[in-house]
Image 1 (tube, rainbow, N blue to C red):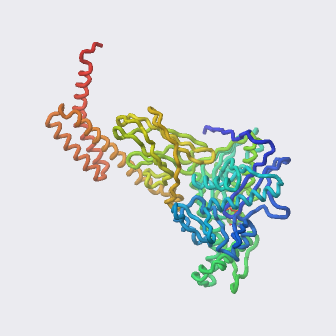
Image 2: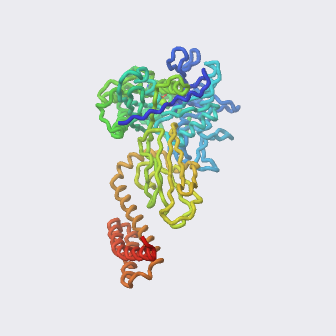
Image 3: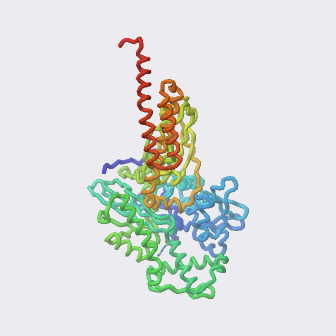
Length: 622
Ligand code: ADP
Ligand code: MG
């Protein structure tokens, strides 16, 4: 496979300027830097404090806002004014947020003006997920400034590999709101692989490794397959589930207890602090069971217990789900399990021994867990920040697109410009033309997904290329260009090449698909592969038939005087039959009738063409 290298160093930064790496996690956030003397990445912690900042925000009644451990302690006491798992709402619609309502104890509403945006209500105030994330980032920035005793204005922030354009953009905006210049948004698994440093220290030594990064955090699961050689990191494929993680383990334990104790679920659901207490106890049990065989605890009047055996039985199906994702990642990378040299564990939930065991058994290897799984992403982000600061010029990084990107063409078909798993940054362009004479504008609809018909994919944006000068159909050359920049954000341009009329897309995000649908896309594309092929063939046949009807009609308008009576009647009949076949949605019939019309019109079309040429030649000597 050919390797492309992209030099990420900018070299335009002030010397000694600090760029921090931030793991903005669903559950926990961390901030890290590369130590200026030791050149090793370290997480920042207050003296005697923890490096982990829970991604929790508490809104006090007096208007004060706290983030982190203090806010987390308010989850039980003041659940309605305590916000957690904000990352799950990033770039989401109100409708999508409702799918998460069991996990959320705070109020959220649809924005009156833009119903596509979810807002979180705190008394009289409303916050978007981006604004909430910015509160966490601001607190991390202040924390870093306090520890480092210097201003911190630049950062690299990590996001899950599954984040789409809107979610990446929302993260970038959150950074901006927090007063940070976000130099790069990178995928968490990519950062983790950097932190493992495979190939990093030995950039000059010949080494080739294929690494699987397994990241099971609080709210998301990602698997990435990376190829690393001679200091070049190449992400071959990614897969995962944005709704699978430690939170789900906690929920399963709570459910287990509720059933075991016969607690009235309705009463519990209406008592938010009680619900939170159960949730936190479940997390405690889970953590304790990484070291012992039995957990027991108390909540109110209930005695809770959970054995390791029961716990493992409870979570086995969930781990199996992560392993299915791993299998898909191999398929996408075109690899076999035996091609993997190294399996890397990331995320707090990989501390569960059964996770390591099952993943190890699946890969047939002992998993690599030598770097603290909570810190590994932040450490990698710090290393990336160091590269951007120009301190490490040898490192090359390549990311890939999780879903295909394309535009709608005739018949509602998806025309893919940048395929799934293409390398980022990535560029592609293709030419299109008009279907109607004098067509003055062309609608460009951008979609993301794997299905053949755009209606089954996710619309990202739409715009009109206007002011195309009047030309016969088929003559304008409209070049549509896709550019995915290094942050994974898509810029679409359309340009009519003959006139130079051009436009760059104004992305108006549409959030009318719920997140589960987006996640299902890959699965769906496999399930529906056969019927999609049939539908694509039908759409193509219909487009071709319609095109022929149109050109025939235009031809007749100009040339009917040259046709015989019989030719006129045959043509009219054939056109009618084709029209009928098109309305009947019968691909074979459409193709057959198209062929019939073609065979009727071809002879007289050629005859009339010859006449026209002869006419044109008259009086001209060659
Ligand atoms: P995220 O990246 O989603 O913010 P983290 O990687 O910080 O998440 O992982 C947080 C998750 O890890 C939480 O669900 C937490 O309960 C879980 N976790 C942390 N320590 C342990 C442990 N010892 N055993 C099991 N789960 C743990
Ligand atoms: Mg994480």
